[in-house]
Image (cartoon, rainbow, N blue to C red; front, side, top):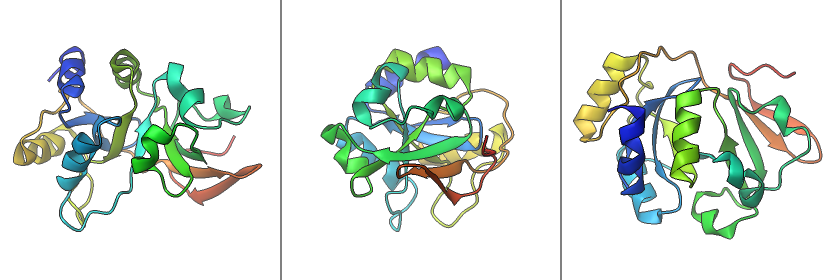
Amino acid sequence: MQWQASISWLQSGGALAYPTDTLWGLGCRADDPGAVLGCLSLKGPDRQANCSVIVPIMLLHEIADVPDDIDRFLPGPYTLILPLKDKRYRHLAQGETIGVRRPDCPDLLQTVDALGVPLVTTSLNAHGQSPAHDLLEAKQVAESWGIPCIEQSFDAVGPSTILLWRDGWEVLRRGIGIMP
């Protein structure tokens, strides 16, 4: 599937495999709890909700309380754990916080911005398995799950760096993102 065609697929509630700036991702529209449940259930019955959202730029400040220095990290290979502001996304929150991403992947960001709602994102792998590394592996996983895959060459480079905001940044997981 091409990026442009993925917009209508995602609008309909479908799950999609796609490249990011870190790993191959699995996602769907975040404002549809049924779609989110269906998407995350692909990873297996033991799957716990461990996902973040790729947020359209116009909604970033509506969904989360955003610190002034956020431009240091976005777009980039970071997952930022921020205070949740928009309670419509409570089903994706860990307590009162939500993981937010804006990957350095222009095609993905254009797609999410055109979609106009956040995209749930998690790694493309079954529970307990390694994430898909390249397009061939991503297509194999997507085909086994009956979902489309974005046809774009990409080799995974590693996980995002996870940062928690609490009146300052705390590193929860070191990934490929470097602290500026």
